[in-house]
Image (cartoon, rainbow, N blue to C red; front, side, top):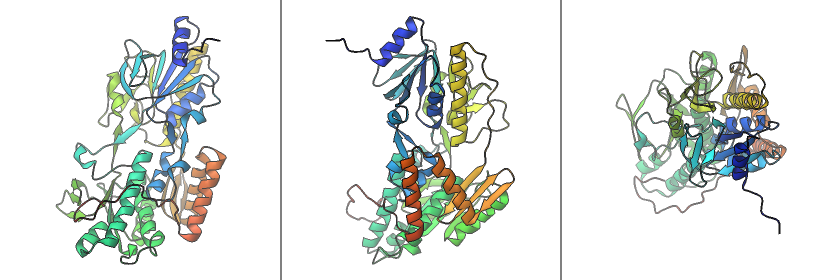
Length: 442
């Protein structure tokens, strides 16, 4: 009987010791990590991609899962499947627990030490509650599939609890929905929640009228969508208010509990469902390399995306703050993808003995945000779109960037059906709903 082939990690280590093929370790299977791995397809190197999850999630559409427009499988793909044809990549599902830049090793909870010649940090971002992590249980953010399904669960259970409640004040609280943060994610969540309440559920209940729900969008700054031109942001606000959303700018949150939020000016807004879209910070793993960070935890990287003071370590995406820019690059998919491609090509050049590319330069393609089922705003240079045309453009762009023809067709059909019929098929509550008690989580 033939001896079993060595574990790819062991084979990569043996190859490294023999001086034949360098080992590239990529931490994170998001937009940046995947692009870095793909850019190393033809390189004479072994690549190990480590992620705690087995799937890549298309984060720009997470809010659609949270509001029951799409199912999780519509916007997520197994990482192994995405990279299945790339024979120099080995995928490890594990949680990274330590990085030793002196020994050039990564330690996980499922493998022995993984030695690297090049390390790419692409672990993304997490929610930031600005020093109030105790708010997290009451106001989940939206970064993962699990976040989206939890928000969906809370949203739908609130209506179910309101249908059974005999207390009018409690019923009103259950039908109040609060979104904290007026960036694209907050605007999209508020608009989609309004669609669910006004159209999707309007005929499904007998004792309550979902159209009477109160939806609040709280923004600490002077206006929503600060990254957009002021005229488009004003249009978005008017559209939201026309949908019944109460937009409260210059309204920062000072407290949050299971019953609602308190703002810095002393006002209290009761609500059973609170969603946090107010800020993010780099993943804790960014601290493992022991270098300079900004207030959001991002690593200060050189113009070639290397981490100063380390050998062969790169940082990309939401955990990187590139020197040479007046302000940090936005935490959006195009930034991570461009960084990932750049780093992959830079490593491939080093492995091949070619000159390294010049400094990284981000090319901004524009900003898009959807407001509801028939309106969106688009800003690409001097090119502007709003309303239905903006929504059609937004839809085409997002469908195009999904992975695989099947997913593109499914999402396109789901959106078309939703637009025609106001029906959303992903309205599932998959856990037991406890007996109704006053002032409890729905």
